[in-house]
Image 1 (tube, rainbow, N blue to C red):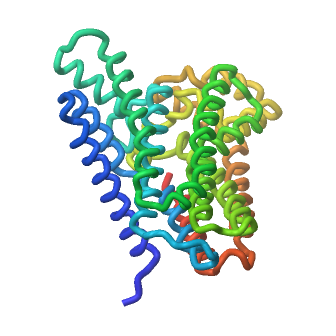
Image 2: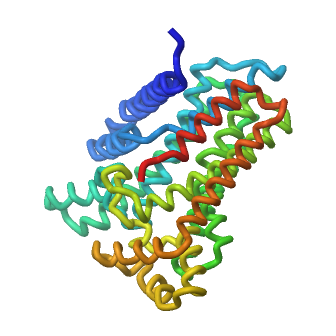
Image 3: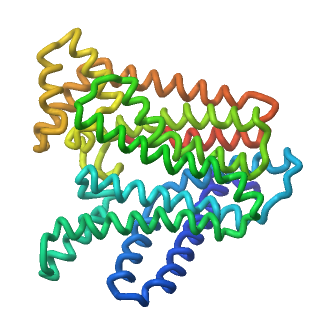
Length: 365
C-alpha cells in the first residue's frame, strides 16, 4: 500500500517524540538523584517539551538532509543519529517558549498552564515560603536554561560523525544567536512602542523564521554537504516561508480561537506585541481614521478585559491590515516556493517542502 505524506509525517513525528522523551528520561536518571526538586524540574521540562507541538523544525532539517544526501560525495551518516541530532532543535524550541512565556507573562501555552505558572500554582498549593510568582519564574528560567544546554549536548552526543558536526556548527551557532537577538528586538520594540513595520519584519525574521525553518534547512543541507546553490535556494525558501509562518501566527494572536490556538484570544494585544499586522492597521488608521489610531495606540499593551481586547480586534479588522497581511503571506509563499524551482533541488525534496509549507501556513483561526 502506498503511503501518503501525512502517513510519513506521522511516523517521523512519532520517532522525534520518542527520541526526545528518551533523551530527557536519560537526563533525569543521570541528575534526578541529586534531589527530588531537580527531578521535578526535569519532569516539568519533559512534560512541556513532549506535550504537543508540530515538530516542524526537525522535519525541515530532516527533509533537507534526506533530500540532498544522495546528491553529494560526502559520506552519509546513520539515519537514526541524524534524526537524534535534529530532535535537539525541539530543546531549543522548548527554551525559547518557556522564556518567552515568562517575558510575556503568559498563563497558558498549548491549552495548558505555562511552566512558570504551573510552578507558581504548586508553590501556592504547598504553602511554601516566599513569593509564589518569583519562585515560578525562577524555576522556569532554569528549566529553560537546561533545555538550551541539553540541546547542545543532544546534538554533540547524537552519534553524527565529527565531520558532520563540524559542518553543522556554524548554522547551529547562528541559529542560537539569532533567536535571542530576535527576542531582544521584540521586547525593545514593546518598550519603545516602535511603529516601524521594517523592525517588526526583523522580529519575524530572527525570532521565528530563522530558527523555525531557515536554519533547520541550513543544518540539513550542511550535514548533507550540499552545494552553495542548493543551500542558498533552501535558505531563500526558509526565510520567506518562515516569515509567512509568523505573519499567520500574528493573525492567530489577534483573531485566533483559544480552543484551537491554546492561548487566550487577543494575547498579542494584551502583551503589547508590535506585529506587522498592528503596524499596518496603525498606518491605515493614521490616514483614514485618526480616532481609531489613537485608540489602537492607547490600547495596545494596556487592554486587559475581554471587552477591551475585542474592541481592539474590531478596530484592526476595520482597517485593511488583514487583507495586506494575507497578501504578504501569499507573496512570500509564492517567492519561497519559486526558490525551489532549480535543478539543484531534487523534485522529491521540492514536493516535500511544498507539503511542509502548506502544513505550516494553513492553520485554523
